[in-house]
Length: 376
Ligand code: PLP
Image 1: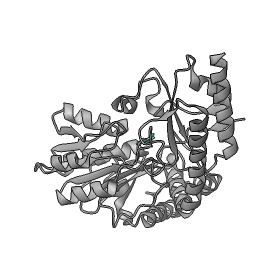
Image 2: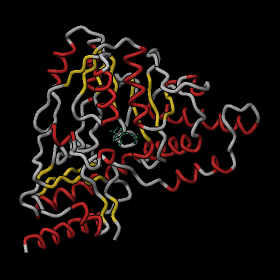
Image 3: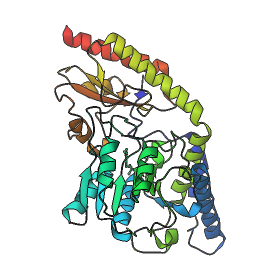
Image 4: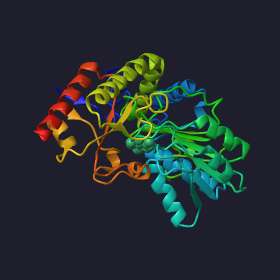
């Protein structure tokens, strides 16, 4: 049996998304900047995709800028805040993805910003009183806090953080790479200035995403060249990717409740079975709490097995991971910040609409067989 439980790393492409993309590889291959009919068809499709995305987020189409994915969107947001909007200090968390953390740390090293971290408890819950205390010090500030963590799934209260940012006139960037397509966003209500998203986390293609940059906030040009994306992001548009991104978001938003209910059942089943069968199991961060974590992620802490648990699962056809796919081979900075016991096994299982309860039963049987083998 082949079981894919690494959906926080990437999700399988939805066949309907693939079908929507193929005409833009085979028939409508014009360069969107060309003035002839081929080019005009491609341009029209891109602008339609932008309108679709904007409509699902209650944003304006001109606030959506297509990028090569979440990393570029995060980098653009941070560089824009510092170099185009006068930010001198950034307040963030130690749990951010490296697309955010490394960008910020490099700017700190260059002396462009002061960098501060919000205090948190042992489960990774952010201390918003501390954030408010930091914000009260008047400095041109960007707050960069992800909506949900990609390793342990902790959900942050971006609504409340947005309100604090508004009160203290700070800019707010949220990495929503793990939540876009899985939660609803109303950007007329949510006070966020920048938001980053990536298609391959919600059954779209890899290598495409978008940055939401609120009207009135200046955006930096990371890439120099042609006048694409209103001269804000040079380079011929990834048209089939953009079409796939919009289609994937449309499907995700239209079926959100149904998919959420299905995936929650999968996560509940795994939590229930593991808790019952492994007396020494625990869940990292807020992962085991359904109301405080991303429903697609469960980060499990099991007793040391003495073997490569992930390797063994892989041999049995089960794909999971130890954390972020981008940092494979390194000790996770998220688990380090949570002071997770390094002598235990920490495995991230992440789910999608395509997983089944039968797959979860198979995973649990495989884990039990492995631990019995070790004990024997
Ligand atoms: N931010 C988070 C929270 C992620 O999980 C990821 C990818 O794993 C990224 C950013 C980077 O996105 P992309 O792979 O599209 O560059």
